[in-house]
Image 1 (cartoon, rainbow, N blue to C red):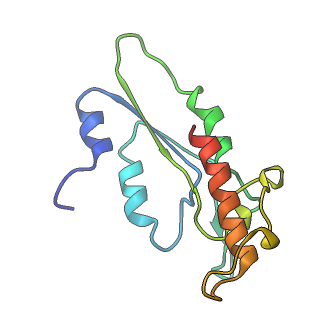
Image 2 (image 1 turned 60 degrees about the vertical axis):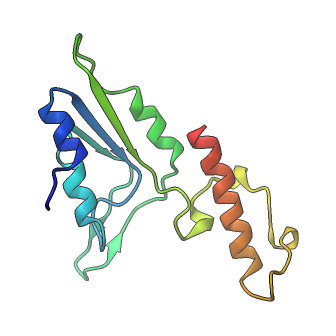
Length: 139
């Protein structure tokens, strides 16, 4: 990389850096994110996956972004030491129906108007529900 990651810059500047993520810690496209994360003093992955004997990426459960919040208060505090907290949410990535607890279901296919005849109405409803949930988490 041409420039150092922000996590590295802050850590080398005397900050305690904390990385908390609800995204995968392995998989296609995750290498560069993990490089940035690993310059942090503390790293916590809520959702961890493993590659099984058949090279299949698997996880034992779905974790929701609100689970990250409980770990934000768990960090060590050292008097007179500045800290930076990085939060990496899964947000509204696909599969949308897995990004929010069912209690956050506000819309279903019948609530969605057809837009030019394209798209799966339930998929669009799931996306809108994931945004509704994500807004609640980040607020």
